[in-house]
Amino acid sequence: MHLSVEGLRVMITAGAAGIGRAIAEAFLEEGARVHVCDVDESALDAFAQAFPDARVTRADVSSVEDVDACFEQAMAWLGGLDVLINNAGIAGPTGRIEDISPQDWERTLAININGQFYCARRAVPLLKDAGGGSIINISSTAGIMGFPLRTPYAASKWAVVGFTKSLSMELGEFGIRVNAICPGAVAGPRIDRVIAADAAARGLPVETVRQSALNQNALKEFIQPESVAREALFLCSPMGRQITGQAIAVDGDTDSLRTRH
Ligand code: NAD
Image (cartoon, rainbow, N blue to C red; front, top):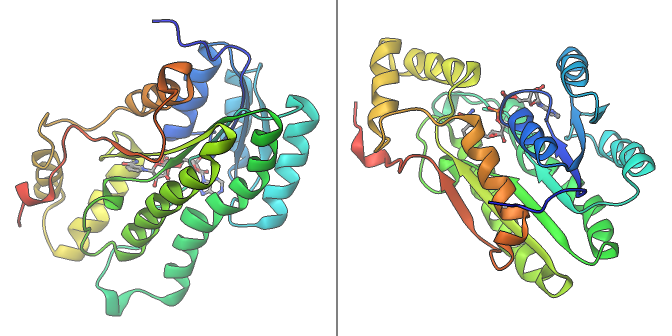
């Protein structure tokens, strides 16, 4: 399959590790030009060493100033934009609503949804100048079903889907497609932390919660970051030419009703 993303100018937020890094690697392998931002300097250094063809900027997506500076730097090199991957997002707190602090709530929404807005408002004029392009907003299965004890995260990820669908309608006439990808539980250190926090909040053994998470998935396995990356590649390629406004799960068919503690 020839994806024809060669030469596309791509910005990926939180691209130094995890899913964002897998997306960056996939686009680089297909010949795209990639600029990555991340808040973690040491992760950025490791990324820059591994992928010398890419460029990096330290930026916290919840800061308008950081995002603006990142776009300035990226445009000095890329000279325009064809693809924005709004990937940055934190897990947020795990706990009952009465135990969640307003600060934790606000921080989760600041990164997970405000950050996508700060990046999209900079990207859209560039995508219009390019005559079209693609935005991928990373949501989650927590953006298509309820997630008890993770209300800030679920609220932010449902917000991502509403943002995506509205932007798709607003931008279609400019040839700009906007889709959300909703990963299920992705293998890696983050899901280990999420499971440990869930087990603590529920007073259950970690292994019980891990099995329960696996059981929700029809394939009984955690999602690989590369699976999310391939979906992003496809959507941004000419193969995805008529796909917009969708919230597409890459989750092994996760269903919260399959598990009850
Ligand atoms: P991660 O926790 O592994 O972090 C990836 C990178 O994000 C890190 O390098 C980190 O420094 C960076 N980052 C964190 N906050 C940032 C900020 N404010 N600004 C810029 N960079 C920041 O994350 P991940 O698991 O790769 O998740 C990526 C996206 O996928 C997120 O939006 C997440 O909500 C979503 N997601 C993840 C899972 C999962 O199981 N891991 C499941 C569904 C959706």
